[in-house]
Image 1 (cartoon, helix red, strand yellow):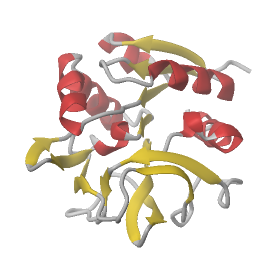
Image 2: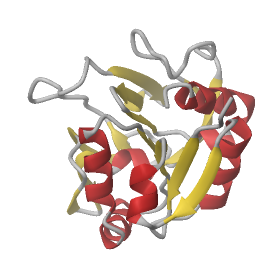
Image 3: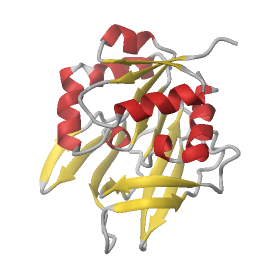
Image 4: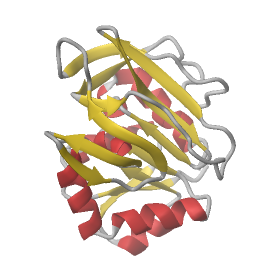
Length: 211
């Protein structure tokens, strides 16, 4: 069978090579690119991200990434965000009192976790949303997290353009936050599948199966 073609969007964020290797291992032909045409035409677009929300959004805008994501989703073409690549899909982020506008594919504010110890670093379980395809066969596995910020309240202020999302939650030190979302062609994880061993590879294979 033909391997799906995945573009990993290069917008200056770190963690790119490990994301490329993980998706290749999961069974795709992968191109690391900042070219809008390549990103638009791939079967799937992966948007990684590490670091600060504001710097990731600045880098994303420099490669026209907001428009690339938006146009793919309008056409029903799959996009997956990882870590800060998930966070920037929401309306805004607040870091050190500074608000930064995100891609606004979903409403919501990314803010600092209120757990007694941050960052949340290490392996943790997830509570998959109803009907999840992302976690099919790996519902009870653990995934690797590294983050101090997240979405603590899930709110859709208007009827979604796609079927109802499957929202996955994780608990850490008494704090609950959204750890993954599946919403039509748009998938995202707060944790790092590329650092989550076999469970992460199987999750990426579940995504590739939708391309």
